[in-house]
Length: 132
Image (cartoon, rainbow, N blue to C red; front, side, top):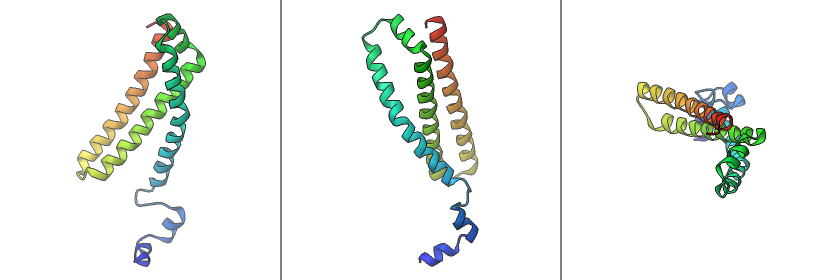
């Protein structure tokens, strides 16, 4: 059985580790990289939220306005949304069988992910500039 499965793939495809879509390995790696990046970023985010729970609004806005905080918050948001988009893409590719529906949903989650990340970063910038 193993020989039959192996014979369905070209030798070049086996060497490169590419499936029929030619991008499965990169997708898998990006999911793992974003998951690893989200571990320390999530810990930092939870610690930051615990810090700002008991402070006044001005202190919270000042904390968010720090370049380090704003940068880490942006990285957290981008990694979180990108990881979610990658996961949703796998679910859609695995469980939606209509090609047209699959294409529409894949485009929708890509645009929604980009829109959410952009909206979140713009909102954080506006909060720090105008004080919310």
